[in-house]
Image 1 (cartoon, one colour):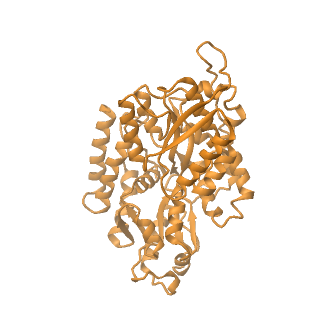
Image 2 (image 1 turned 60 degrees about the vertical axis):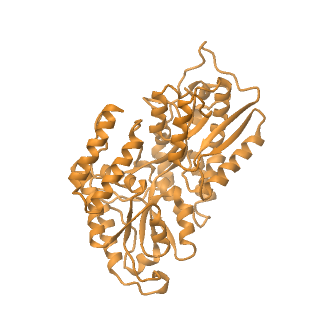
Image 3 (image 1 turned 90 degrees about the vertical axis):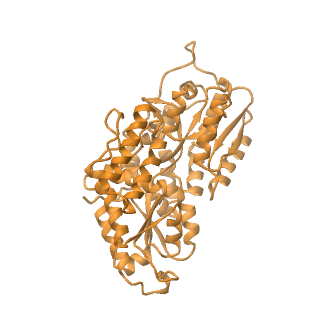
Length: 447
């Protein structure tokens, strides 16, 4: 099935129909929480360590602290996501968590099961909270990703989707007039890009070696496979999330595509972020990577060629792309006024102006529809990177969040190990996914 590109206006129109739902819960005595009226200090742990992410979040913190006198936020950089999670879990075990942290929905489920996650409803409904218009301004799919059992526990902050990054000159020389619209086209294009002989120095790697695409053992490729299996009619878990469901025909066919590409030489099996290096050095013509990595890919490419992005291809049944990125979690160990101070920080960094700045500087998607509306005239058409960054937003109508399960972070690791075994030819698709299924089902059953 082929699918058409959806404009930003269509994204807004489609997602606005879902609406944002505000809870009506108030304080314990039934009254609305008044606005914060005195000063509090808050700590916010994050993993925005590389590229343009760290200076931008520091800029937002400086702006927030100088914009008002009630809350002072102190940022604590935890280097990367695995470190952030382990430090949070250790701090919770010691009874000394930070006031707030970046968190995936699965992490929020972990924190909630430990009875450590704050109910932010009173702060949403407070006099200095969010209006109904504010809530409806968030993309509904992103806001829903911050819910547990239908209740809003977190607010979306740095959200992304994977995209295809590609070398426009290599595509042109290989006779490919547009990026692949389906996974079948993706595989065919990868083979075509590997087999053609680059003519111009502009498209040649220094050693003459080149591949159509890469497959890396990084979580980004596990995420791409998850979206691929959903687009091919599969599912990650069953309806009540009690068992895995990915060892299906759709799951096996999806990873087999990558295994076949690697075996034929059309794809290069790499580690970590080596795919960015392969693209930048003109060894690979296209890669799958998160839009949040745009500044990193851009740095690797430099002025070597025209870098373009495209939507993740559709499968045999539908178009689907998995969202990534984190929300803001507030811990209930802090006093109520500190929690309210955290919400003021959360409200600030997800405001229209802040989410525009964050998106323009880092590549992450804006979380508000009004920001996208504004950026379609102020940034997307005029900035040289605008069209590339807009692609991630264009995908939102068919974006979905991963399972909101405490064990899913660990499950991803188990799944990725087996995906790599399949791609490396060490196991068949059915055996590898079967082994992953056993590990994930054990986690789901025993936590």
